Length: 108
Image (cartoon, rainbow, N blue to C red; front, side, top):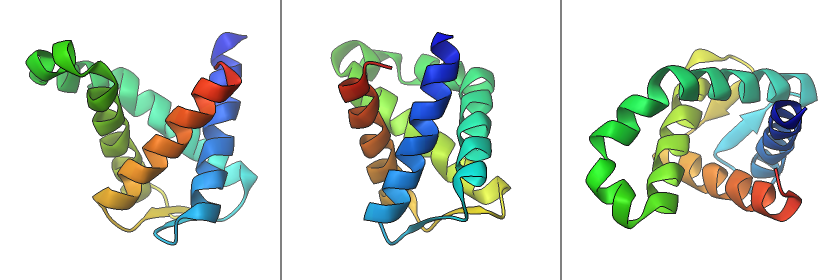
């Protein structure tokens, strides 16, 4: 149940980021759900590699490293999907920040 909540909050965060940031485009809520799923899958498959590589920084600044990793996952997802586009890393980082704050506020 908790994973479903995280998935939905991430999809809502993607829609919110697309509304707030001109460099993020998503066609509809279904595309946001698919993008959130792809981000989650990429995080499971590759997130541990980034955490391992960035371990010294992760130890000192864990939230910053998580934001950076999520930004990379968002950027990759934007490259993989036609219905979800990310212009550059700055927009991906800001989208990761929007999703992070939304998850924090909603407790997901």
